[in-house]
Image 1 (cartoon, each protein chain N blue to C red):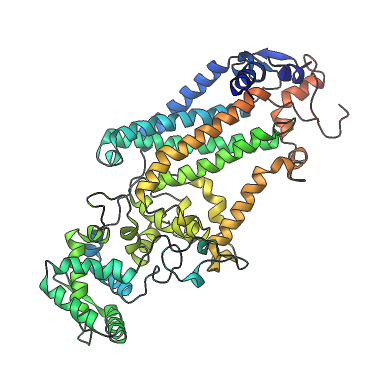
Image 2: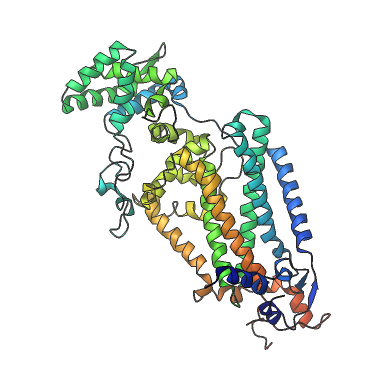
Length: 200
Length: 323
């Protein structure tokens, strides 16, 4: 098995440029709900950008500096936009039964990304080093311990929380989102459902 | 276009589209919204509750917390894995207790780790505390409990005079001196440092002991004032008027309903329910009824209303549609 040849085939046959960066769309792609996926993606870009700036200055920066606090505010509201858009995106894709015609992998990877996003959000709250972190750490530990995960993940170990939040989980999330996007671009937007009671 | 895409969209009318332009416009709109909202509303940053704050503002609560931990009344005392070996206290569901699977991974002995060890460090600076500590450790466990029980009861009528917690005369042994020492440690701002002392100092990344110290009554009273208790929908709320982790509402909702609202195993029960929901969501394409629901709800008719209008005699004629 030649891995390089398989990769070549994947890119040239499964995802040519016309599919990866399309210049035409089926006419049924004509609703505002189609914009919420890219809204999630835009919020993710904002989260990574503001997160990287906060990483540059260290975890205490946003408590002591007005600029730092503003960047933290950008990060905070990007999270709100991210999850709000994600909710609309997921509900609309569910209502469209968008997993049809072999698109179940896109759905499954998307839901996995949602799970990782929720855990990333939790570690974000834990990493703030303020009252929220203090309270959530002692509250969330019981749920995490009850599930047996507490043996590996300690909500009160700020070092572990911080590295998970700024490295491990974002990498995993970006990886899942990339696979999700790969499937979306490869498969194209799913066709509309046949209307019930119509012989079409 | 790949052969697969070409075959799928055969007979489907296409329209011009600019993916990058659309992406850039949405990105700019999101960035603008975030900048404006952040500039106007800022973000929450409620300060931590430190030992120093509690010792100065609520000295009786500080001493009560310390005495209760020393008496073995801490919520961590017999918590079970991963902190203590009390496996019977681990939350279980249908006889399954996942917390026990991996045993004690982060051993904590509250009375020793939270009280005796910090006081041992303080004894280097304060001879009275050293003497009291020796007297306490030389006493039998029954005697220690008798002193502590009497002292904790006396705190109901305690007063604060010149910053010191005063209780009615009684047989408390060395306990008042030990508690005075803890209060001094708190006031000095050294409590957290004494709790987290380890071989890795001056580096430390783990604040387990500092965070657990006030977790029972002190933290809960602060959380109650901020609407953050479990029965107030807990951690899905945020301090002030800011939106919190509202996406956890389905999770916190199950803590409000029976049997979870009154169960000792609520965390595991709610966790199991949420894992179940997640699996349903994950496998929705394959689960009967769940995968038919979108057809019955007919929301898709709104989303694709332009397309259906075309097929009802509007401009152009739609191509093939999937089942």
